[in-house]
Image (cartoon, helix red, strand yellow):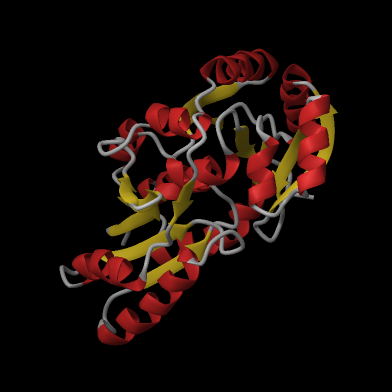
Length: 291
């Protein structure tokens, strides 16, 4: 049986049309500007990405909140009590406590609904990396894969999701503890742009430094060249912090280099964007591994 619901969270940054196409459930997440609290949905019904990044550019700082156990319980139980099994694919446990909350709820609800199946999977990636894994999982579900087999498939395939980032404003890495204040100051003065990747254990870590925005985009493509599996049916996801021209450049280059089935581009949402800032950009694809 493949009659089960795939669920993810707003950190997956999937565009609303794709959410509808895939038939998945996306749990919204909240963020704050001081005492103001907002909820991020895929369709940006409450706050647009453009307005969010404009506010960051203006000097405002945002904070984010995990999905709590009550929210997970409400969503999961809504399906289970109607006889629908659930597979949740969530934001990396190395970057947020959200996945841990889903595990606690899954343990409780599995005991409450012993005849139903509720499985939660750690994507060990973020933003459209999680989105790419969810996209691929839906394809397997549509091919008839059972929920148990799909869960095991996710455990293996998640480490093939490759993600390469660069950011434009080093101060956001400084605030997140990934860069010292001195390094951020000197790097900004010299026009240094870090290249980051998602590791095997789901962390976002700096790998190298280059000078200038254009060079940072070229280096993203160089890393993709080394790790991409050009199978002819790949789907590539590009996510950006309100820098559409740079995303369009990457899209054009990728189309020219590889046999691509589909390229999906979307804004980084406020949950991830709070930590990466405006001008951040990343590419995700199924690679040869994360080493």
